[in-house]
Length: 568
Image (cartoon, rainbow, N blue to C red):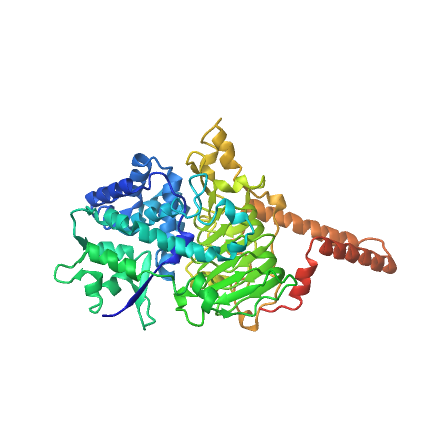
């Protein structure tokens, strides 16, 4: 018999857990499956339409429509679609937006019913955390201990992976009961559709082989059937045998953070720091992992500038952990990014195909085009983003600081940007850009509201003030363009991107032009002044002296020194 190795799809757990709504219980999710199947192919089963889900979520589960859509859209972002399919979907969204009918775009959306219900169930990962929050509803990785510099904190990433495995093992039978409507005391078989759906969170391989396979493809292999409980003649699985097989075969992800920390190769992308207690490390599994499982792990990088554009980065999952006072320029198309427990840093990223997740950070700036973004347990965060998906902001952010999350339009470009966007199927359109339309979720009465509804909801109630305090839109007068401080590689000279794709919103473009006009007026005033040649030299020296003082005082001198030594 072939031995197998199963592991969890960490993208789903690390990026897809949005918020554990109180009605996402076994009882309600079983009702969702039953109701969806009763609707059949008319938007219920095997594919669930937005309209059917919205009816169940809003009318039956008393969920805010914005949160219901956030679940639906995040799941869609996690689906394994090609770049071509993503672009076709974006074009459809753009067409509906231009015709002022965005609701029609949602009506065309469908997701696999059983996989989506499974996705809803694992939102409960929060409540089953081994580090249960005193508040009851905890965000992943965001507990009171998340902000302590304890010695055991370096293993938090490993504990997270193990926590997810433990959650699945503890709730495996419940998942099977929900997806198949089986009665644990009487039913003995499991339909193949359930095993295929479970493959959304579990994948694996035959030991000795490198090909990653779906759970179903492994389970029906001739040499595995006895252990997996597959009954070929009936086309189903024996429940107890299948459950026992999954339990015995599920292990740590061989391409996860824990494995990378032990077996990964070190990249010489970071300089050592004087404080020996903080050893900067950049590790990758790119030399042994399949392309869709590549990971680059940055940890303890501080007081430096890291600039890279490389094949190793292309399509990788990038995890940045406990980095401080560092400027990152990772200008390649990335699969997904998590930024965890970082402070005083700036992250300039290439297009992100799935999602960016920010957890437990303080005083950071993100500049990126991304399909989706989630911010939790963080303060003093500035987001310059373009995204077709509403940003998700947790209500736990405003418990840490009086500074809300600041949202601003994407403000930079580099020569390869448009080709990188196309490679991951991410389009930039002013009509569909959701950078300033976040969904706020959290513990304040289970509220979940988008920016467009805040002004019309909870008037006179304390909850409205709480939700508005979570974020603010940057004033155009405070907005500046960001210039990538590197010369392009010789291979990128012919690339077409010479401006911000999609342009800036009108009020921000006007503010930028106003600043540019002010600069031109200053230059003209200096040029037309009656200063003598010696006075001009003296004036220039004074300006340069003040600029150098500002560079030192602002902390940018180190970055300038680093930039003088960098190439990408």
